[in-house]
Every structure is written in C-alpha cells, then in structure tokens.
Length: 506
Image 1 (cartoon, helix red, strand yellow):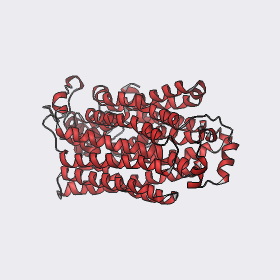
Image 2 (cartoon, helix red, strand yellow):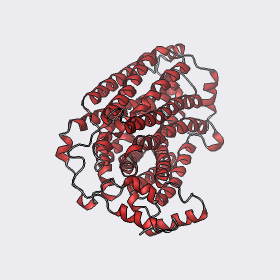
Image 3 (cartoon, helix red, strand yellow):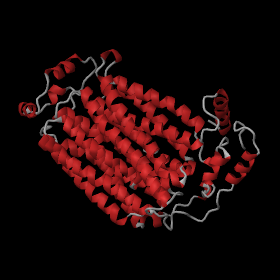
Image 4 (spheres, one colour):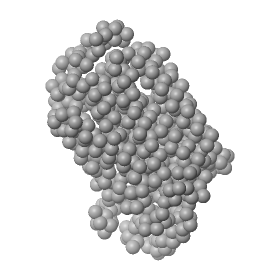
C-alpha cells in the first residue's frame, strides 16, 4: 500500500466517524500494537494446545502407564472424549511432539537477529505488518500440510518462525519511535501484554475448538486464528505510520511530546557493531532474554502438556488452566508499568535502579514458584495458583529488562532487541528438546520436576547477572550524533493554522 492510499483510507475512516478525530495517535498505535502481539502469540501458542488433541494418546503411553495413572488418576470421560473425536490423530511420541514444537524456533532465531536491522532500514511498521501477514497465511496451511507427513509439518513450523522472528524486534522499534519517555513503561507493557492475552485466548478457545467435532476439531484452531491475523493486517496498514513525524493527522499537542526526539536517516544508518558487542550492559541484557525465553518456552509451550500428560487434566480444562497464569502476568505488567513510570517521573529512583529492582522481583519470585510446582502433586488447581502468583510478579519484567534496549539506545533499539531476543530463541529451541528427553521414560511428576528445576536455576542465574551488570542509561554508542527532527516543528506550526485534523499535512 502506497503512502497516498494509506492517507486516503484513513481520511475515509475519520470522516465516517469510525475513529474520533482527536484520538491521540499514540493510543491508536498502542491499541493496534496490543492486538498485533495478541495475534502473534495466539498463532505461536495454538499448536501447543492443539497438539494435545492431534496425538493418538493410547499408543504413545509408556509401558509403565499403570503406575502413571496410579500416580494421578484419570477420569473415564477423558477416554470417551478421545475415542469420540473425528479429527485425524497421529502416533507422535513425546520426542516427536517436542520436535514439532521446537521446529518453530529453527526459523525464528534466524530472522529475529536481523529483524531489528530490517525494521530500522525499511520501516518497523512495514516489517511488522509483512511478518504477521505471512505468519497468518502459513497458519491456514497447517491442517493440509500435516497430512503430507512429519517433515513437511516441521518445515512449515520453521517457516512460521522465520516470519514471526521479525515481529518482536520490529515492535520494539515501533515503541522506541512512538512512546514518549515518561510513558515508555506503560506503552511497552500494554503492547507486549498482548502476548499474554493471546496465550489466554489461545489456551481456552483452542481447547474448546479442539473438542467440537461440528467445527472440525483441531484444524479449526489454525483456520480461526489465521483468518483473524489476516484481517488484523488491514487495520495495521491503514492506521499506523513510521513515526509521529510522518503521521499526517497528528495534533500539535501530541506532537509536542516528541519535540526532543532525534532521528537518524535510514541511509545514514551505521551500526556500531564493535561497540555494541563489547558492551557489558548489552551482554547482561542478552542473558536476561535467554533466561526469560527459556522459562517462557517451558511454561507457556509445555504447561498444557504437563497438565494433560502428568496430571491428566482433559484438553479443555488444560487450556483453561493454562490461561489463568497469562491473565496474571498481564495484570502484573500493567500494575508494574504504572508504578515504574510514576517512580521515574517523580525522580524517586533513577531509571537503572527501577529496571533492576523490577526485573529481580520478576525473576526470583517465578523461579521459586517453579521449584514449588512438583510439590503440589496431582492437585492441578494448586499448580495453577502457585504458578499464577509467580507469573503475576513475573509481569514486572516488562518494566525491567524488556525495556533496556530502548533505554540504552533509542536509535538501535530494534537491532539490540533482535540480537538479544534471537539469542534467547537459541535456548528456546533447546527447551522442548530437553522436555522430551527428560519425560521420554514417562510423563511422571518426578520427571517433570527436573524440567522445572532446570528452568528455575537458569532464571536465577540470568536474573542475577542482569542485576549486577545491566544499565538503563543511554550508552556512549547508543545515541549517535544526529540532528533533532525538525519536521515535528514544521508540522506543529502547520497544524496550529489548520482548522480540521482531517486535512493532512504533507
């Protein structure tokens, strides 16, 4: 879509009253960013829930399944639901399932490294839109591809990761352009909390769709979220612009929030790679991402399998239980971001202290909750309560390490975020493989406890490193010499003389 077509379409929406003329444009970016990350994570997580319904349970049980079921008894109705399902099922053991889930990261960790550079070079909003559209199309192809065999399915999953890899660093770059300094924590937390609510909806709705044969069973999961992602892209392409200075309908009052923002031309973009890779705070951020993504992969991707295979919760309830911790982390991120912005605006703490304190709370509390999960035994409700509390506090990380890339370098935030997130994705590949290896002899609580203990130790170590060596101050290499964006002043002056915000500024 050309810039002229985008302006014309938005003018039609404004004149129709679909959107209030004076609605702050950063609010629109925040709302659409939230739903964008919602779609991204919904399509990432739907396989984690759907795979429970895709697997033919009986052949994959280990020889000691009598002991397994004695450890956590299963209700007879669960077996009835399995035999009544009309959707195709596959004889995938735990190792094969882990390979399917982990294949996503084969492609993801490639593009997540370069996603930030692509965003800075070609426009963050464009890269994000293309990434999520292609991801949606591939989601629609899963039910067909799985019929061709395991290799095509794993290949498609890798392609999904390839498309999605650019979305996170691109969105980080969008935040660096659109978030005023004193609203940064809130805007970032609201947008990225879409990932948690995406997990909530995916966990509950996917479990429900899998159980309804009239809708086709598990294939409907990929059709519903794929269509939803394609529809979302239209709104993103119409209403989101590269920066406040490029938005033709922004008001003068809102533009003043960005008057001190600096801009570097894409053609002048020279990344100080040596300075970045020799920066200790940068490596502290990388380790924080690695610990968080490894833990997130274990908990988000594998929790439904733990509830289903070890505690024998049926697929619908497993999805519902898995959604509650995501609601908790979403609330935690909103609460912590409000507190963090207030502390920063009031000058109570410096920005580095705020990031370290909030991130330490997030990491240590969740780690100890993971250690406590195996002691809950077969009481699934208690597992969910403990884990939900840990995830509520873990939401504080969105005012912790998650914002450090923007703090250290607004200019290269997307690039830094992409490298750090990509490094974490490498561990994301290892997480499902580790789960498959540790539970191959049987999905017992004892075997799963090893998974939770390893995740807790990694999280404690990476959280400690971030607390000791990170920084939220702009680094010497993080803000290159560049002129302040002058177009903002020009637009402001023209806007003051304009009688209607529907008349675009060229």
